[in-house]
Length: 209
Length: 209
DNA sequence: TAGATTGTTAATCGATTAACAATC
DNA sequence: TAGATTGTTAATCGATTAACAATC
Image 1 (spheres, helix red, strand yellow):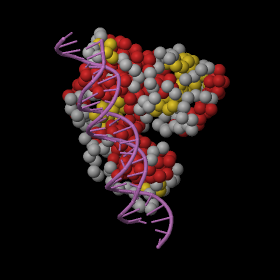
Image 2 (cartoon, helix red, strand yellow):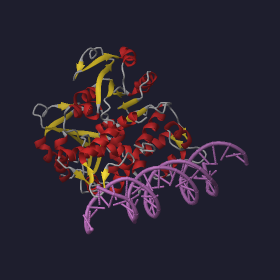
Image 3 (cartoon, helix red, strand yellow):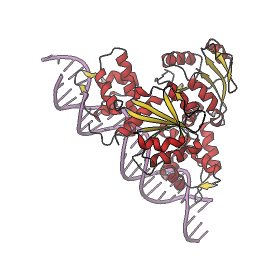
Image 4 (cartoon, chains in turn purple, orange, blue, cyan):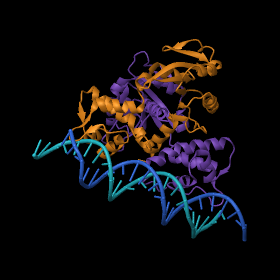
């Protein structure tokens, strides 16, 4: 696996491949060529072969790709079989919804704990996940292996909370606040869900059709 | 405003500019150069000037940009002053959370109605938004001007519901289902929030540090 | 075998960055 | 005026697409 110089564009296509291949699996498709996969996904066959070739040789000349095998390979590349551990900070409306509905396990994540400032929430569990006080955050992080922290907290405390967690050694943030977080350590990764940015993009597109 | 050939990359930076400029406004900053704006946002000054020049000449040599003015211009380009009308389909956990917490008005959107299949939900209101039966959807859409539909429904009914709405003339979709929606009409725009794709991207990044 | 399709190299296209004359 | 900074053109860089030999 020659994983140097993988561009952001390629990485962002991987989950889409994974999704499409899962779908093909469910539909009972055994093999697929880059050409037909491209047709289904609106991507050129060239790009698909180029993308996959960053990570290895998964196909066979004259045959194409075995769907189940390719799906497993891409899942492996994405790390779905790494059993990453995750903790949620902020169990308001959005955090609650994610705990209840989002299938973390399908992405290979286990949610071990959640933290909130509200005394009413602390001590309860949501969908089996215990909610602790923010006062216990540092102790918890020091005592457990946490790969990713979900930030579902108010904007106003976003960067401060992130800094606190970075100091505790956290390297992965799934950020739902509409704030651009940053760290001087390039090993710290931020993945943002910016609802407002997304809606504004749509606003632009419908306004400039 | 010479708005031909605006690339996707540029469009996706506009909300970030808008966010940053709003922040600068709130901090009382009056003027800013492309150079200092770039430093704050981790973007080159060249790119900033190039981006803005797609839409007009908003700066002044030797001075830079007036923050409030530039913010207004970009807001205008994004369509925040268009008062777009929006309807939500599916008021489950996530839909409910968005109605309660998301500031649609800040992006220039008014939420006029929501629709759900649950008899328990129909007839109630959430944060002032009335919830109607899915049976009344067609009649409603025909009788009102709706610019964007938010899809917060189960995956299984996503494409069918989208098709139904496209037939009714809807051109803008804010899609929260983890499904790639499509239409033969290029004027129909889809903006996706793919939670799972986002988390998988992060998974890749922390696994390949 | 003949046809299909890969992985990879080369060509093209587009986006980012650098440079600079214009000018506030 | 002199210094700063724009808008724009040219240069560079990177990503996508096309082509094709290798081979199943």
